[in-house]
Amino acid sequence: MPTYKSNGKLLLTGEYVVLDGALSLALPTKFGQSLTVNPSVKNSITWQSIDHNNKVWFEDIITAGISKSKNDISKRLIQILNVVNDLNPEFFNLKKGYHITTRLDFPKNWGLGTSSTLINNIASWLNLDPYKLLESTFGGSGYDIACAQYDSPITYQLNNNLKEINTVNFNPEFKAHLFFVFLNKKQNSRDSIIQYNKNKFNIKPVVSEINAITNQIIHCKNLVDFETLIEKHEQIISKIINLKPIKENLFSDFNGAIKSLGGWGGDFILAISKKDPSSYFKSKGFHTILKYSDMIL
Image (cartoon, rainbow, N blue to C red; front, top):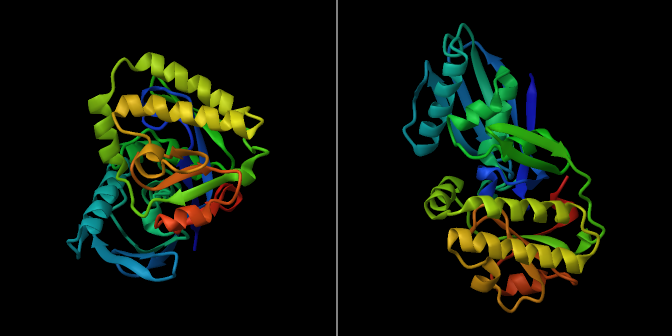
């Protein structure tokens, strides 16, 4: 009964521009997803997905690449398994069946990597290249796959289609002042990438600026400098994607800095505050607030 586990992800720097070679700081999370494989006497795949409340949120039976269900989740799963079969042509030639159970330990609307953790777990099970599997299914830079595999902060950079991944000692002394706030909606990363590609212009100087900020953030020793770097990063990305920073949009009266993480407009933000900002965000209708140490590995 092998079980595979992958970490969730948050992208602290380099959102969008990671696709064009920017050095990005990525943070694997304590929350993730597991996949357990049991043999079955049936010549099919029985799939069951369990959420963080231990409730089944999806199930299906798949035979030779054909699903019994017709919903969007089943269609996406079939797409993934068809790509698996392309990479491993024996996959659907089942002489035995499988009962597969996935378990999330975070709410699936949090945007911490429901898809990337699944892709990495499937790849681990079948000894496939997870980056190829991701590229042929969900797309993206691949930083989320790297987070799935590493248990500490990493830098991630695409260089002529090669992935450069390095662990870094990012454990800021001021982490007690860093909080993650959920914006009550999931951001579709594929839509965000499409918008970015439409809007980007003269990207090389921007990549250089983000590279410098990422390195400065990694080595930053005090909260004031960290806030300054975060705000500078927000302004740079704002100009590229032609959107106002989240602080201007929703939290203009917040006493501290705020940064979007990943695709702007949803999922989590980073809030930097000298005191616990929970009451402020709850008064605005945002009730999911996590301390840095509760979220990040």
